[in-house]
Amino acid sequence: MKNKVYLVGAGPGDTGLLTLKGKACIEIADVIVYDYLSADELLKYARKDAELIYAGKKGGDHTLTQTQINNLLVEKARQGHTVTRLKGGDPFIFGRGGEEIEALLEEGLAYEVVPGVTSAIAAPAYAGIPLTHRKFTSTVTFITGHEDPTKKDSSINWKALAQISGTLVFLMGVKNLPNIVASLQKNGMSADTPVALVRWGTTTRQQAVTGTLSTIVENVNAAGLKAPCIIVVGDVVSLREKMKWFENRPLFGKKIVVTRARTQASDMIARLTELGADCLEYPVIKTIPPQDFSLLDTAINALNTYDWIIFTSVNGVEFFFNRLLKKGKDARALGTLKTACIGPVTAQRLKSYGINTDILPDSFRAESIISAFNAETVAGKRILLPRAAEARPILPEELSKMGAVIDEIAAYHTINDTKNADPLIHQLEQGDIDLITFTSSSTVTNFKKLIPADRFDSLLKNVTIASIGPITNETAENNGFSVHIEAESYTIPGLCDAIVSYYSNDK
Image 1 (tube, rainbow, N blue to C red):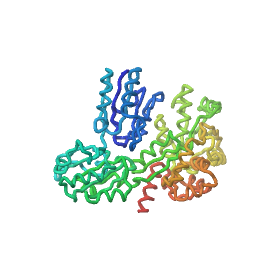
Image 2 (cartoon, rainbow, N blue to C red):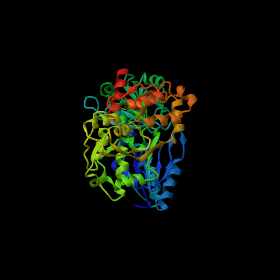
Image 3 (cartoon, rainbow, N blue to C red):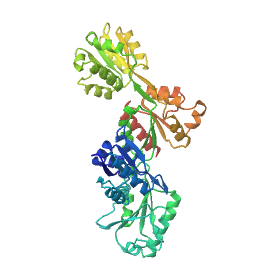
Image 4 (cartoon, rainbow, N blue to C red):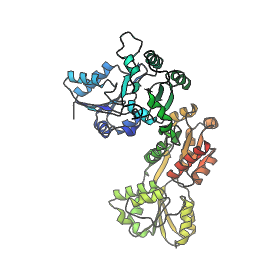
């Protein structure tokens, strides 16, 4: 709806906690005005032509004042735009959503509020702290921690808070923690009352510090905890030690670089994130179609003259069928051919086009296909091999020795993706990276090209390297990498399992 502003709660940080309605509002927006605490990853749902405006407030550093934000929403809506105001947490829990609505009301502009999961609830939950529990308390109170409790006209009733038996949750209060603690104790709350601070709750950067009113300030200072934090005060904090779950995941907090092409990285990132890793997406390769389709088109037009077609990767399947469909054909054009695939994921992708593979070797490498063909009569048979232009030559060479006639055709090219070089090198310099994953030889060679030769050893000195299999492992070692982890099953799930095993044994 034009001339309308949607105030959307973006949730506490875990992008999976965004509501479906919130996602829909991002997708339809002409203009998105977003906060510091709303996850940047949510902006991937925005239209490519949407105007993105950052209006974050961080530790007193305000990109825009609240008045300027109000005026911006009014201005964009009056211009006829659909505006989504993306706010961290929930718009009405210390989110100043009410002030923004008042500005819209004054101008007679339409608006809608989409609630979000507030960090006041989510951060404790991810830290293993139930805000209510029948054995402890049936009440919970939310308080701004941003107000100075020592000021003369404080609107907070510290005496009532100190004497209440329920859970207290302070938002934005880490800087005022000493004053909050002092005010509660001064008004009668026991110094032994459990307290927890949760920073960056629900994200892979989550950090929790516990103590009591008498020790929490010292504990927080020792841990170097800074904003943004949620403060939880009450007996329920004592449940954290046995109920914490988020930080117990095997890869929690590990910063892992995913070098796979962006179009194929989602499954791997999802798996590693579920295991607790903080995934850094730095694709070093990208796949592109060939400049000249003439050879592939000729092969597609003559599919009935081939006996076999071999797919060595998901990319090979995708690029081949994209071209096949563009030529007005479909899977029926392969009706007379037998098929072979390297790896179950490749076979699954082929099956998505309605074709089961005839050969699926146990090992996920070219040599396994060669072994599998020993049981077949291939002498004089014509085999189509649509794959990357840069692929290893062993497969066509060995099949040719067996008497097969091979048409090896470039269905796609793998090229270097260099746009992430600077931020990647910066994070290596800062020591922010724990592990780098390589899922193919091309990811190894292209990653190596991004690193200055004279700094290679120093930048990677303390970084763990994980490889998907022996071929990738060999390429890595030939390029100077020390490989610490090699998957036993040469698949993405196999690589993730190997990484978990490595860190579990390390503990």
